[in-house]
Length: 283
Length: 300
Image (cartoon, rainbow over all chains, first blue to last red; front, side, top):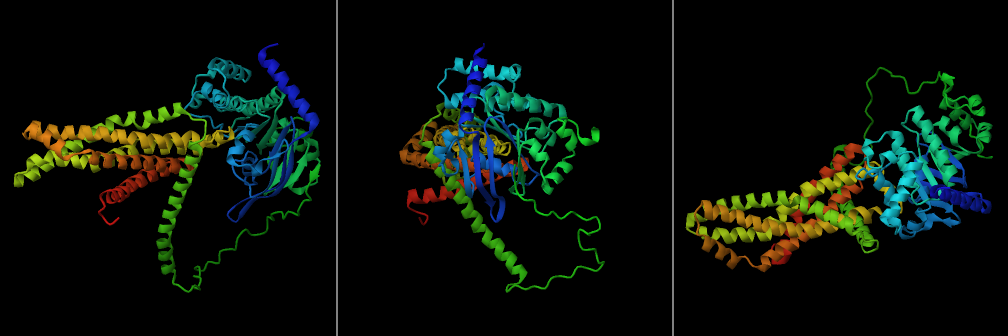
């Protein structure tokens, strides 16, 4: 067994042990956020389940991006709690947030790779910042991560030279560098072609399985949502409209859920059957 | 399944008009109901917005400075980033600052010899050039050059990082972006601009010597002795104090505009323009204030 797979197995075991203790990895309670008089999040409450792909969906302008910015404390919410492993991170100071943020990794919509660094340095960045590893050990770890994600050949390319799918892979490799417990994907398939979207979905699931992370996926790509999602939360105009497994979500009586599903152009029948790759018009 | 009770949703009716139908009549102007006439309100708002924007800008600069001090004194200390900033602000500005210094000194030399010849005092051109350069021209021009070259680049780089989420990415990686991006740049400005000012002094005086002695025929010994006699350490110190303040201010303003840029490519362009314009204005205003304080003249 290689060192990488041993580490993966250990990570998976650790995640499994933690999951036995508390299946809820992150609790959001009555979260509120306003900009001036415009209230975006109006008391959002939901749970993120440990070791699963938790998808948060909603129309554009429903508050998904604002919410994800609160989850990782890029912004401070006006009220409410975000409890990660029993710790409320909403009340932490900037200094105390530093260790708390190390539990998270984030893959941004446009990948947000540092364009002044090559792929290798992007992935090595966190190891250099937060560990005292020697450069030789960093190289081993970085190359192993890049290899696992299938982008080791691009190690010395600059981000501008990569395709959208490759950027996403590198962004995932970078986010995983410190082996975070929670990985947040902000609209991972937006702007990608269907084949690359599928590849990214596979990557999300493969990453969860291999590294045992809890994934939070912000999306409005319904095909992708039903492909990878284990738990779906529907955000509607700053409040949670519905939340549950994909089956529970499809069985929802909520008018707004139905409207959203219909507007997404993906057949509920196809989704129930697990054949969600094609929009209804192409089926 | 946790589910919030659905609210009745009003389905858009195909028959319902989305807006009032056009009547065909000309729009009727709403009668003015305020105490002040609208033109006075418009002018009043414009006048009030100027100090508001000024104080808002000062507040943002003070806020960023406070964060920079707070994070600057905390570990980790990233010396490699500091050296890179020194190289960017200082080494890469050597040529343009040197070139500016040479021509400023040469032009100033011609003008002063031409002016002083009218009353036979052309030998005073050297010391006057030296004094003007060390006290005023070197710190002001070196800072303006650094602002135009390094400040604008800093603002653009940080602005691009902001609008492409790279600064947020740093935050999510538990790396404070002010500590990582702003602190080294501000320190580099405060350290390197005085060094560039010294370079400007030397090359500027050399440029003046070149013109005055080699072209206009002044006595080289008199030129040199007069410069040494008139220009003293106080003049150089005054210029260096200004250079430290200007370097610090220019980089702080550049970082502030880049760090808080918004609105995509257009926003980055706007941030860069604002950074350069504000830096130039700040240099000139601070120059007056510092000169006034140091000399005890000028009303301060």
